[in-house]
Amino acid sequence: MSKVDWITWNTDPKEILNPNEIVEKITMGYQDYNNFVTSRITENLKKEMETGGLNRISLNVYGNSPAYEKTTNILNHMNEITILFDSFKKRLKTSLDEQKEIEKSQLIQAIEEKIAEEKKKLDNTELLKNRVSTSNQSISLEQVEEIIQGCRDRIERLQEKLEVAKEL
Image (cartoon, rainbow, N blue to C red; front, side, top):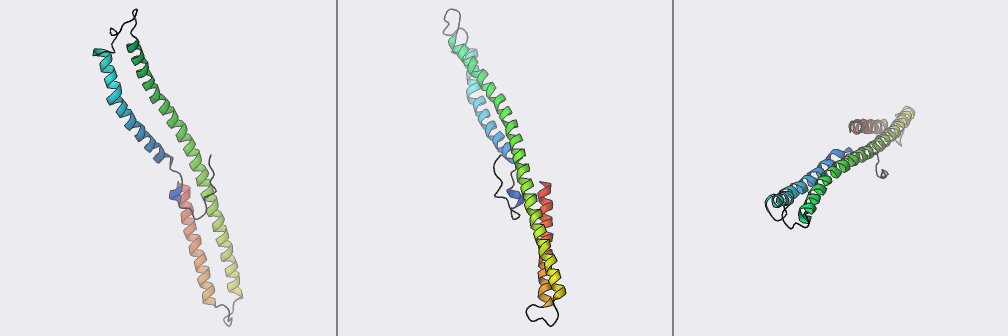
């Protein structure tokens, strides 16, 4: 699987791989291709095999019709493409699901590490608050309270982001 070293605590959960979206786009592209092939090629070949120059009696060499046989082979191979695509789609979905789980775990781990860092800052700031007296001239009690509230707000936002990441 590909690297996930680009994922940090600041990564938007919407950036995490969405396997269903990718598979849906590929499926739609294949359906467009298949509709074109069916309507333009397959139907015309079948019509020619039934009524036109590709039927069993056209260009018959020693009881065999090479044009009819080759056309039959072409149609069979076109059916095989559908089978191969379905197999490819299943393997792709499995790989994409694995990659999403790797990205999701990395995001959760990064957010949890950032929460721990913020909690440590909060603890240190609260210890500072206990040491600050009202006569302190370098930092006021109100400033320390603002720092503490800022830490709490960041932790709360990170907790919310963590919950979103876990729901992916």
